[in-house]
Image (cartoon, rainbow, N blue to C red; front, side, top):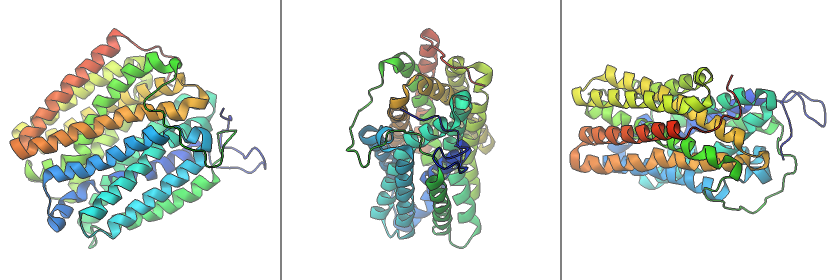
Length: 408
């Protein structure tokens, strides 16, 4: 059971405490750390020496770690409380940055991504639930936007920050992670001050792995929502893992700040797309988002075919908007339908499907790049994801989920 805590005061002492915007800021800082290395992979390739396939494998290690945590401890915050789980995620995020600062080869690179994935897995369920619950019932739909915007915005700010620092400072592989450590320290203090929204918490409860089980109340909503999330996150995976390599090898763009900005653009567009969900309603946002996502994928394919950076940026903006539109609608439907005492676990199950979409197809791109080359592998990828998005959109039209709560 969750308490109606709006963040205005502590229920015991009457002291004002941070509310859901502060929790969203913590969420954004944590997620930014997971994408900091994106523009830096080229530098690591030069320093250590590894193939494009290894770049996607390093990225996949992160995604596998996220999925593992979601499966094993996705519902942990429902029992232990949101705040302790978020604090644990901040510690893991700081440890990940430490691995990158000490990096001397692939082992620490893998360790850093593994720890980063563990942090993101804990944050995905616990921080999303905390943001929504701190807002109270009357602001829950607005808080759902704050949660998804924090997640997407944080993921986008990571490569933008590291790209700028790597291109224009003398410590490209050091300063991004030092800055992130400072931000994590601030986030830790904020988290410590947040009200706890789980009423009856347990101290160190044993994990109870739940797999991808969802409550019966959510079963009718979950399938179309998860299908749309899978397709949208596949596009995000493409930009997060290999877009800088596309920009350098196919388009001749070697400025790390530009590469980071291209990745940032897809997440910025995702956040803007989420803000449009209220105009469509969560139920209609799923098929509309899939349609816009397909248009973005076609633009990305065109940019690779004719080597055009402007088309790649347009594809990022269009595809990101479609992903955000469908993703916020999906998360709103799933979180609204979930019982309060199972909300963290249900959201985590939703993210398992999404992170499967962000990881598995991208590893396929890396494998195909060894055979076909990066450009042709990207064309095959965009075609496959466009077909998947079309199927997800058609499914959402054929069996539209019930909309239990309007989006403002």
